[in-house]
Length: 451
Ligand SMILES: NC(=O)C1=CN([C@@H]2O[C@H](COP(=O)(O)OP(=O)(O)OC[C@H]3O[C@@H](n4cnc5c(N)ncnc54)[C@H](OP(=O)(O)O)[C@@H]3O)[C@@H](O)[C@H]2O)C=CC1
Ligand SMILES: N=C(CCC(=O)O)C(=O)O
Image (cartoon, helix red, strand yellow):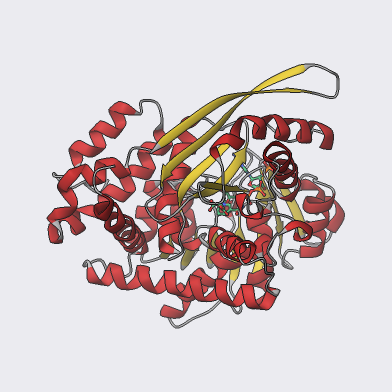
């Protein structure tokens, strides 16, 4: 395991002590601290005023009860979270995750990643994240609405377009954002379009926001491929997940001539050697809210389903892997299998989907590895573009917004690539992303004094 610089090791030890039982948060902090030894060697002033310690400690952690009534009239209780991690670059900005696995440690890892991701976009947004252990799967629209209304009834007092701006993440899409926005408007009696992003197009949403994370990861991964003199055309690609990020990753990869042969959900994965039929996938996932196994049943020829526990999607040979489901879904064992099968690039659409061992395996094998905080920043970047449109009471075309997104992702790639070179780790996008993001946050924090 890479070592943390002696000057930074005590910071990591204190993070582990103070945040016991939160392994995903420890993992996210450790990866950044492993990169910062190179920085403090050149800029020892970043060690002053406990600046790095302050970055590792959230500015505010909000935890609250969410009571709601199900369709049988039974009162249910969930727990809500919002971690307002760092506002050096702007208002807290980050998604809401509704999933039974959510706890404060998960939200803190997501919020910590968000600080550097948002800084890399070059847009005025700080880092935050929230959500709940509420499981939306199988719930009626009415139950989802009543949960969202109760969740927002508690959270609204902490939000604002200049304070904290949530959006979607796992389990939170346009339906949930609509119910959350409606309740916020009712409680505040303000039409504050910029308080949430990922909104519907009829009430201030941005064209291209739905596609943005998947398109953005594809742009970033394509830029990595192009540094190696190649491209997506003719490449065999595996994309895990089959939600918002995965679907629009598949769409953009196919537009560049890549063939996506597998995708997944928590029930298992499907393989279609003819290439994923995106219209069928969207019908199953976006319209019917069905399970991925239906794809194989409906598609028939050349397609098959592997049930969860009976194999890993990463057993499927590919040139490019794009994990777009959830954290730590791609293990060291999976990485070794992918390398043995000839993978040449990995673009993380999900947040922290590769374990540290998987990252090391890829990098030691010379695989181009794009970390989520850089590769999946297209979603939050387009959220910030939605905020710009709302602030100017304007709506841009899809082409205008997508062009901005493509430029932002190219800039993020180049910033990571050049920073890695500058700090003696050529081609290491993890080090490049962590250092470039850190410096953008550290400078305003130094200017603000000890707050
Ligand atoms: N939405 C956004 O704007 C952004 C999202 N991300 C990240 O991308 C990833 C996917 O998010 P998104 O597409 O929005 O979410 P969705 O809820 O739309 O889709 C999530 C997908 O991942 C699968 N999944 C979730 N948890 C697990 C699990 N524990 N095991 C296996 N499969 C799982 C889901 O399967 P199932 O339906 O069976 O649960 C589903 O196919 C997350 O890591 C998120 O943090 C990153 C940047 C932006
Ligand atoms: N879930 C998101 C999107 C956050 C946002 O658009 O504010 C992420 O960047 O992980």
